[in-house]
Image 1 (cartoon, each protein chain N blue to C red):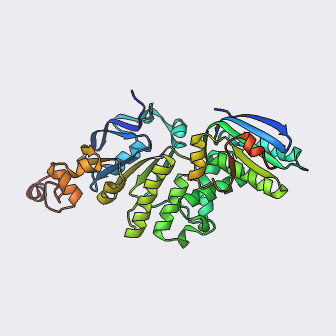
Image 2: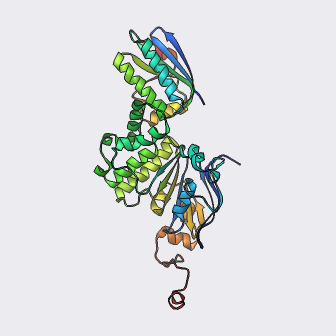
Length: 115
Length: 266
């Protein structure tokens, strides 16, 4: 299953919405979309929010892609915030002991606050 | 047919020449459960394992991975199945000329187009799962046997398999290293929901963590059930097997012919 990716410009930077499975067949598409965001937001991007509400499955390549996104955000001083994780995806983050590595919010509104 | 099975063996038969190794094996390994296949040496465990992973064709019978009969597949036709399974070999089978990190990244590089940096992050995640994140740059020869097994397990997990096969995972390890591997199998099943199929003669290990135990004897399924059911079995062969007693219906002698006849008949 392909992942559908939409990118929105928001006040603090960008909102990336993913829909579908993020796995070894599709995580490269997510990576490409994130690279484009970092290119566009080179100056002045405060945050990249990623809406995972429509993602039901994410494998280790998907998580690694988000970790790389976090690495890029740290380099540019931006924040990477994940929001609306579905229960199976939240489980994967907790199992991979990455729940504490990322900033995770219940809603997009929550993730947007304080930026 | 229901889909609660991950692997289902139907009537597996295998002969080597005139010798029958497997004589109609039926069992189900359920999704997200730990199934132990126990049997004494020479009881057909290794042959069954090779058939279950598609490395050997049975003379008769089916092996269903979900609803796909892998015994009907050849060559690259097996690739979709092989990408969904991991295998921990008895000897680990690490490449000594590669570092730990390179060993784990090898299947990812071979089977996916993922970028180097993504693979590097994935390797760290796999090593964290087996508790060896600090050992990425060492070579297998610099690690203990137990650590090598853990690295081999990390490699088996590289492609996020749905099911992992373990061939004698604690063979040759000291009691502590064995317990670590057994706990890892249990944790991977509980935490990641991986279906685990373990082929071994280590009874106590199976009794600790198996959801189901299948005992092979003389090429057939002698008994199957939960550890409690197996312990409670009244079958003297099952009891001898689980207690490890040298005396009982399981003969020390593997030969089928009478010794006198063997010596005297030309």
